[in-house]
Length: 239
Image (cartoon, rainbow, N blue to C red; front, side, top):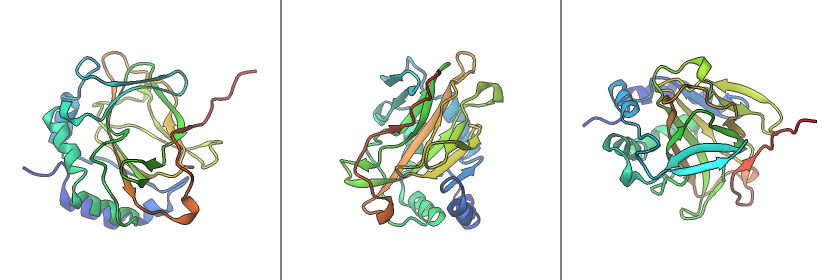
């Protein structure tokens, strides 16, 4: 059975996009379309668990985070479980190391905060910087990989991923969550991002994604901060 991704294409991406990743603003990132094998991406979208299908974790902090998530791979459909395993293989990690220049990456078998994410109508994710330390791995969080699996995404659905400057004062890039698009970005205590505009697709069309996070046991000294949970940019209050 082939990997969830095309190995030759990963090789080309690593060769051609490494410089773009390093130079990207407001912090290192890259957008990769048609990321998974097309027939698999369609299967993942078609079989993506719906709200009644799993014992989801419910995130319900109005204005900050309203979504469903699950890291319990034993409950996932086979195609999703297999894809996540492929994204945690050595061959994929070597691709990430070539693309980003970050060596000695670790995968997370616990899928802490990762796995399957689903946002229904009205859901959102406020602008934030992610938790920076994985207690079980005793490792620093270094990379986020998001793969979008909503077919036939339309601009009126919203849900764009926003990348903000490192002071969380302004949005610098908006990335449409197009079907089978992957976004890879550096994870630090100042890499603010989110989709603060509520998802506006009609029921039952949901914002579906796979999220994977990668770690190292060390990181550059200038990036080290005390361990923290998610840091939200607090929405401005109306006068």
